Length: 297
Ligand SMILES: C[S@@+](CC[C@H](N)C(=O)[O-])C[C@H]1O[C@@H](n2cnc3c(N)ncnc32)[C@H](O)[C@@H]1O
Image (cartoon, rainbow, N blue to C red):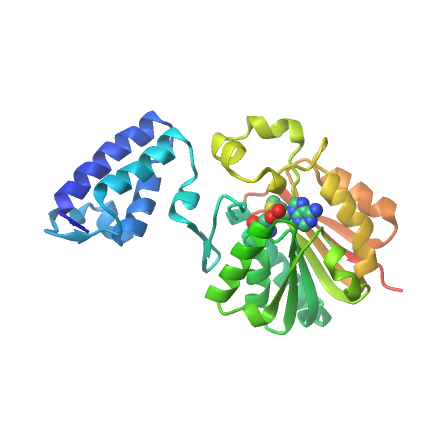
């Protein structure tokens, strides 16, 4: 499907005005045009594509416009409309059955790598990603630590099928084992053997979910968001159960919501099974992660 550069420029100009009117970041149009028209950042920024006689689109202009109207009127996230999202060096498949992996979650991989540098025994063996969703964290770990096997668990069959497809596309299927079930349930046989656990569990207090941006509240799976009354249901469970599965000296790392750090540190200390619990900030300095080690004998 071909259009002239000037036709596409006119469409982009109208879409930009609509984005501003609907309070949607206008940069999303460039993202859309990169994906649908294969335009690069420079020609979009300088609008040089406007003089191109012919530009190939992956869909008719009318269909592109329908997608855009869905973005505006239904507040459907662009990542679901395009079916992909960038995450670390990957381009991951996403569907409305999985949480769109967030840029701040990328830091989990860096925190693990930083820890492995000072604790080299963690660089091989078995790790788990509990609540794997699109598979983002499991894929990032498998790619960054070539000597480990990642066990990736999710209770959502739809999420697991997306995660498996992502692993296939990235040629990482031999490094990740996927399981459907609740948290540790499918991993009974690995009790006491795991080197590390990472998880970005649901942690939003139930009553806050309807007040999130409509893109999140209306379109992302509530199973991925809802952490119960205080948001800590899954985190509490993971603190209680991880010591049965991780080996002594094993590493425990979770993502959380700003403001949950003190409660999580308390739970870790009360459990008596963890040492050196630490709140870890994201790149903007907000407290978003907590790590600890399982007590050594
Ligand atoms: C916040 S999302 C994280 C997804 C992905 N790890 C990421 O960071 O983008 C939480 C994930 O936990 C999964 N989940 C919720 N309850 C679960 C349970 N009881 N057992 C296993 N997974 C669960 C959800 O399906 C969802 O995929």
